[in-house]
Amino acid sequence: MQVYFGIITIVLFIVLVLVRTRNLKKQGIEAMEFGRKDKKDFFILPFALFYFYILIANAFHLPTIKGQALFPSEAVSWMGALTCFIALVFFLWTMISFSKSFRVGLVENTEQGLITTGAFAVSRNPIYVSFAIMLIGQFLIFPSWILLIYIVVATLRFHTQVLKEENFLQEQYGEAFNAYCKKVRRYF
Image (cartoon, rainbow, N blue to C red; front, top):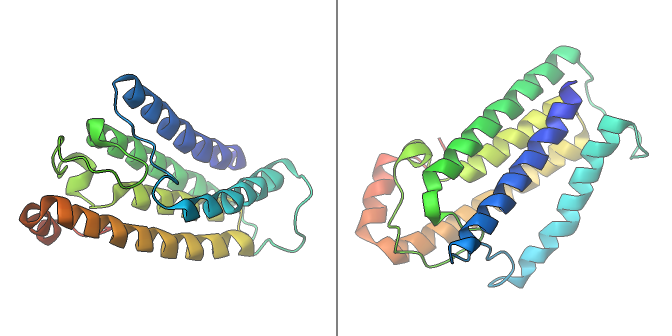
């Protein structure tokens, strides 16, 4: 059962992002900037597809790389399902907190102002935090050395993107962003 929750979590994350970007587009807001400014973003797609396949292969016993399991444990797997649920709830809260400011990629958006309430009062980067929590939960459900590598690489990639976004926000909001950084931690 918990393996299905691991799959459903990542599917819901993706669906929520796609639905949000579609709804914003209907309101005249272009929220999907992925790959438009930085063509290297598209290198993420093959790695994401491989990640999805590893999850699905492990859940449905499809062919995959042998010997990747580290510590199969029913109790740890259930902890992973709970962790995925927490990630999903935090992600939903973040999507609500974003309001109309949600974007995938760096987009100038001073119209909405700097968002500092809701999930953004807890973390300056709640989307990345929720994705990281989800990756950890999925690792606990499917304890694989491959997924462990994905956690490390994704965490480094998230951090690099966060630094870019913080520079971008610093340019857009100046002292307001500096004051926000003093009150709220980068992650938690």
